[in-house]
Length: 189
Image (cartoon, rainbow, N blue to C red; front, side, top):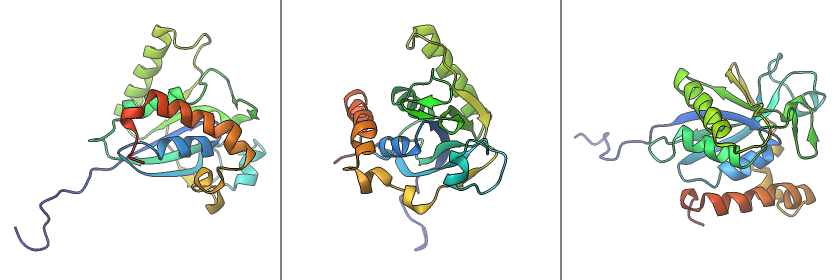
């Protein structure tokens, strides 16, 4: 082995893009999981390129608030990411999560590969078969046509603003649920 080679191989990275209400909530939750290398809030599924938060909030661009998750599949699988995704939001409310209302808050999985699509369809089928939710799951499954990173002030929002009312009332309970249901998957504190 020459000096430029390393005995430790770099981690294999994969990307997942999901939307389930406010991207601040999703980012705060996924960032706590082992194997997650980066979580970026942004927008997917819309008709225009490079949308701004203000434009997306009008509901006219067709974008969903999403997070792009860079992860190591040898540590956490796409199926495990979806288990967390479906546990921390309500996939049965069309264009809504709690008091957040509009198409930008829809439940969505934007797949990169046919394998991700297959796993997403299987997971939804499993949840419906098990009767996890009383109402039908309305999560859309679509190919990723673009991810547009949200403005800098949205990045790591919860970490920088955890004392704000929205963070305490909406995000903190989701994180408590995450810690309770997925304790073995969490990064060390």
